[in-house]
Image (cartoon, each protein chain N blue to C red):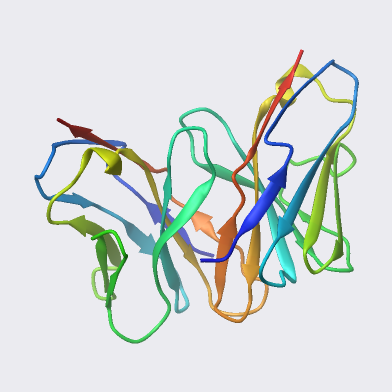
Length: 115
Length: 114
């Protein structure tokens, strides 16, 4: 199947700092990318949908000023957690949609720990 | 809007025994259905999908799922499980086309007992 990479795979930061997570589709063009958050032993919660070249669409309850999403190309989307706090600690997973075969492929996830 | 129900949060099964993980969905439009597997501390991997055509779909590692429109189900089965199948399994649904997002079930933890 298609490959989606995420970088970094895990990050520890101090409260108040900003963290950027990159999501890349390596062998297909992803006009749409999705960002999810997963808490321990829970399912994925969709945070936002990002379409290449346009503003992201955020799910209800997700602060767009805190979770900045940029989808500048067909193979790269970034999520920046601004002024991170301990409650932002989570597992963040991105996915890219291969529109040719109507399937989402997921990255390996980024584990964020805010101290 | 679509929704997915995975009634079983955990399914313990002995190695080499058969297993069925249940998934039911609701939707007012036609659907695409997916099963994803998540190993500990990893992202999701696509296991198999139904988009159209044959209602029985198979994965390369022996899993299969059958789309049953009348029962709105997409149960995942394997005739003989292996220790390495221990993981979390998520059923998901989306509507065809466009920028449709995928809606996930709450997941089923398959625990294979040696």
